[in-house]
Length: 263
Image 1: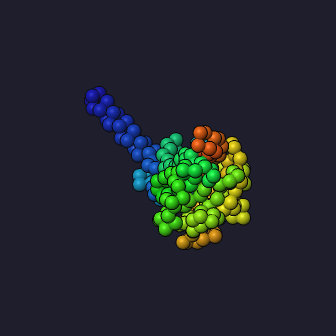
Image 2: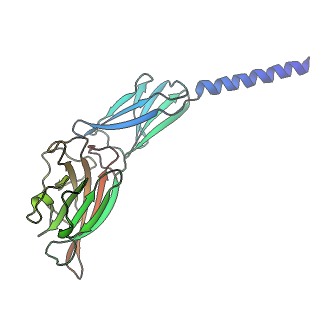
Image 3: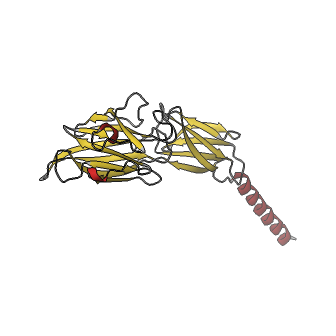
């Protein structure tokens, strides 16, 4: 009889443990997506409920810090760029003491290119940027500029110390698929809105400039999901060939049209 009692107690404990695990377990939110809204200043998040477990609530985290708590029935939230610009956003399903998260990585892509000033002979003075899931940046000469190339924009390092989109130059003077416009030198991680950019911008050593790559085929002249935003960090110098600019370019390509550039 004693053995039967012990067996029943053990079975009861096992059933209780399994039941407790089932009631506290929750899987990550599904299908987390981000969309740029309000002219690219804010990020709208949408997601689906976890596949396993019903959460008590959700938390929104920006770079590890909780910025919002939401009821379990909510599956959308908009992060204000005026208050928070994030490299990583997490939507956390909360059930009791259990937490399980889905992550949206917003880290900008980094590229570096060295271009010589346009008065330096036989050296590349153009930066060619190809946009997409992977961003490529290369230094090219005038003869290699092809404004018909898909998903591509060009700008030149011109006299005296100036960045110019290809459309603002006399040679070749064409409109590429993406037009570069640059802000004034500024700090921060939120690129400015329209009205703060120019296709011609004088630059200084050590300064940082935001850029807007505007799709010239769709929605030209307005911020939308066809555009890209980024930063250009400038280092000016000279060598045996002449004056050059070494440009570190950061591009937000995880969510098109989003003006968040936090490296």
